[in-house]
Amino acid sequence: AAQGAQGIDCPAAPANIPSSAMAIPETMKSIVVNGHADLAQVTMELEDVATPQPKEGEVLIKLVAAPLNPSDYAAWQAGGKFRNQGKEGAGMVAASGGGPAADALLGKAVGIAAMQGCSYQQYTTMPAASCYPLPEGLAPEDAASFWVNPYTAVGIVETVKEKRSPAFIHTAAASQLGQMLVKLCKEEGMGLVNVVRRDEQAETLRQLGAEHIVVTDKEGWQDQLKTLVKELKITVAFDAIGGGNSAQLLGVLPAGSTCFVYGLLSGEDLHSVNVGDLIYSTKTIAGWLMPTWLFAAPGRNTAASAKVLPALKSGWASSTFVDAHPSKVHEELAKLATGGFTNKKLRVRWDQL
Image (cartoon, rainbow, N blue to C red; front, side):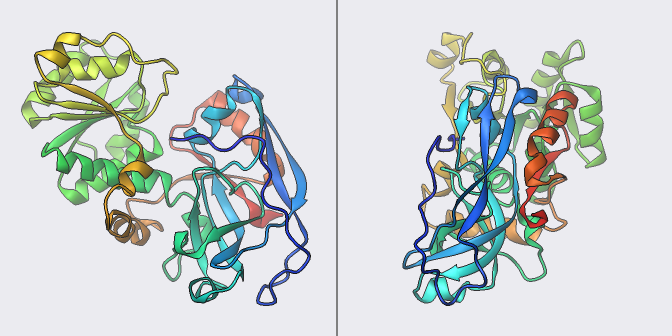
């Protein structure tokens, strides 16, 4: 996914806060990230910045919670100082900048998403039309990860349908996204082959009802994968690893197949592709990014929202979180970086300030 903006402050707030607002401070807390190649060495600090003010058609959201996604912290490993981080979150609309759409959201719980970042702070502004009103009874903290993973899961399944493949391969399948896909594919009646590294990750997926799991730590895993590809008539793979892994997946797929690369967990550029697969077997390797898919066709965002929002509380789109006070996020990140992220997603709790 695209990386957040670096070293850019949010707009300064004029002294006049809208009269329609609840009590809003002139300054707020915002997380500044000090990047490092080793995630366990990443540090964070809270700084005071001006609270932004919504313009006409915008709303001011008081954040309740925001998650840390791989697309967030991957950028930090390049080093440097980062502001305006966090691509999604949820909170309460505290003020309107004016206009019917913005005024209608006052006091409502909403989810927000911004690829340029702005959820690692107490308040942020968004166009009213870009907010996702949450279903009645859904607490904002439970919707903190409403966008990146759930909408990606929907996009992957819909892309496989468009390719007319009855099933697909998914790598790094024990992730939160991978677990969502296991549950969503069962609802959709779609076949799924989950590729993981370790048997304990496979056990996590078995408990969710996953039927087909390939463990790459075990000898003969490639033959097992080839057999499943043939049995399930698979012509699509979604790879979160990149590097040589994408080429390996392309190699086990039949002629005319596509391997979509949507992540770079290996940290390696694409390599070792058999050119014969591309030329003579008309296979394809393509990049895939959820926001690009989501907004490429009219109606996709609305259709995806209809699937995601009702499932956030306890359905296929729910997440398992590790909570952190805004001043302790780097400490919790270090623990996860050392002990592993499987079945865990770090969530900043702005409501704890």
